[in-house]
Length: 86
Picture (tube, rainbow, N blue to C red):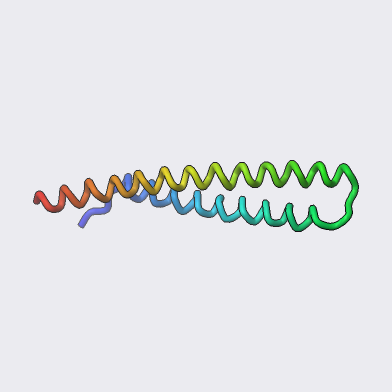
């Protein structure tokens, strides 16, 4: 059985996106943890910006992962249909 290079490429992209999702979530969590104690106003602004960026990365990577998984599923369905025809 030959491996489809498109499937390999999409799988690697999906795994990379999942890593970005995890780090985005960890960044948001770290920002929330550091926002809790008392700090200066400048530090608070930096933490707010960091939280916003982390959440944006988390959401964007999550959407990208969902779209990539749909493309992988469509590719798997097409491969399965081709195998059944043979």
